[in-house]
Length: 113
Length: 113
Image (cartoon, rainbow over the protein chains, first blue to last red):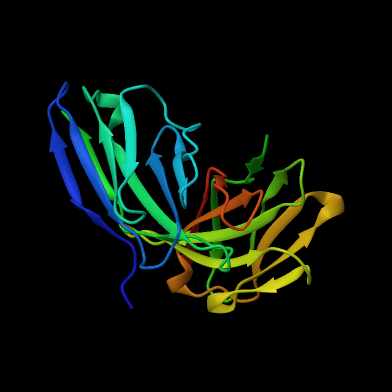
């Protein structure tokens, strides 16, 4: 079956530009997560959506970062006015309550020049 | 707050030798514990998980881990290393089956012939 997909796989952008990263979770999964993996910071939680509840945004590093999840399925992570320290691999995962585990997508590698 | 400590950022073993990757956690509630593996340029794959019940859990590729509450540990072992086990391994903790994951800094496993 289809797993978690993310697009684009690679994104190079200039400092100061906005970027949008997309995540398509596994069909039927009610929970969706964004994480960031960088050399300096390891694997960090960013934001978490669970059904119709208010998202847990406690991991977002600044107000330049935002995310939305439309129709309980696809999610978009937006980074405004990108900085070089935003360069990282952005990972998306999804889950459902009876699974007790998260399935990860392949990630989007973001490079800010 | 939850946290995870992985002792040893790099571990090297000979093919056929025992693999032991250490993980200690901190949690104010009964933890859910996970080990993920990441092969070069790939996403995260779940190796095994502990939620409740039996404290010795078996995962894929011959790996297993034991939850020891008294030691707040969840060390990963494999009796006999294979060249294909070379990868980065991440220990993670969450407060529930669909809660966000808090990751350790990872351990890179090298396997020598």
